[in-house]
Length: 365
Image (cartoon, rainbow, N blue to C red; front, side, top):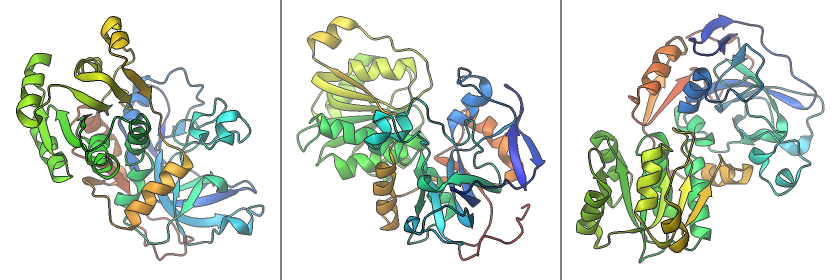
């Protein structure tokens, strides 16, 4: 099979032929139909996650959808998996016994792993997956629409649920979404679905991305390029009659977006971070404490979060901005991701028929 593998840091991936992996008795062999391309793939190559103990080479790609190609002998019938099923891969593979795993948050397991960050990922034609980490799709979707839902399309969903639990959303509230690219485009849609009528304002520096966010349901869009905090407050007031936000979701994670988002929060407001562009948080302490602000980290999503998002997708409730990528163009598109030039989500698509039995010889197109 073909696989795009990382042999060392700060080098292009090597596109090569390797053996189709064998599966353990409790695993399923998935023939990959689509693999979303994430900025964290670029960060992995660049050494952002150098603290992870990696054994090179590794196959990247953690947003994975495909067909069941083979089933291990110990996979129970209760899994309801059959050869040819369309499935997605839930990315958090926990040990199943720690406190976080027991409550369903396997993505937070201290002894866990994630495909594409050690275990083989989806930049390959086949991948072995523990059967417990697969979700079967009943109403089949396009590969390019399905794969991103396992990260970009579910991470902001979990984050907005945190804001809802913090009771900062509602018909008289204003919520800001920072970033209008892959995660931000989905965040706007979930904000409209989950915010109980809150006014949604998206902040970004790219007019084309802001326009897409408006199409996805944002009430207002503000270009932040070259503007001070006071400028943004003035523009927010003109649009909403409010100079402050009750809730904010940061899909960027750069120091300036965090500082801006916290600076725009009203008293008792809540802020959720999912973006990872930077590596430190630097915010004024006294306004944070005296304003009784709340800062949430939100990492990826649980299995049940993904099930909820997939249910919405299968009912046609989620819109996508997708660029289809050929396998041979992976490195080129990683460079575009690094430069911030991808609109929406790029997805490596292996053109396999969702009606296939999953066992045909892999193509190289």
